[in-house]
Image 1 (cartoon, rainbow, N blue to C red):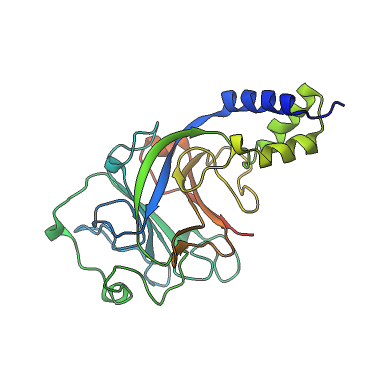
Image 2: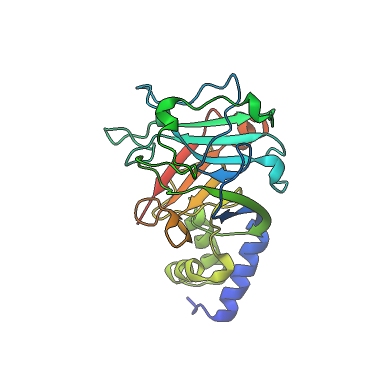
Length: 271
């Protein structure tokens, strides 16, 4: 077995990047509010007439985690080019992921897609009183346990990348180690540390990142719908999943094409 030289590593990384590169939308978080119809983390949700505000099984209200207005974003294959996607989560210590028994519970989070967007603010409903009272004058949510502490407008930029934190990574790296006759462990560690295969941060599409490991073991939820990393936006404003973790939402390609967001896999983990 040969030593993993810089030259061999560069060859392997170039080959991996060429085969596995994907476009994605990188999301930049701004320390500012956004209109009711715009892309943002937190803040006042788009809430048109006829929409039922999300609640859990106990009829407790959820809160807006993320809102994506696709007309404001670059075009990405299979993703909508119009409409608004919203993700609401339960305000608790598990951020709407697990129930009191520690089991994954999809009733504690909700994904909604509005195909038609009404920009007339007069057609917006008033938030339920129990929700509205927890917003301050800056539209920040107070008195609730959530993975963010302010409102962040979102701007999207189309990028391309490849990284290997997902569930097929070990298999892929093992094949490359065998092909180039180098140590699996040495190659794995080198790939994890190499900036050329740096994991993407807050984003739509592309490859996911995890503080622990990928919860998936097959291609059922093969598309990264949204990823939000723990990130400090300004001195006292941040997204923070537990101890510097990351939140992900996955969907199948077929459901994404059909604009069916009823079956989305949510995960967050931390160090």
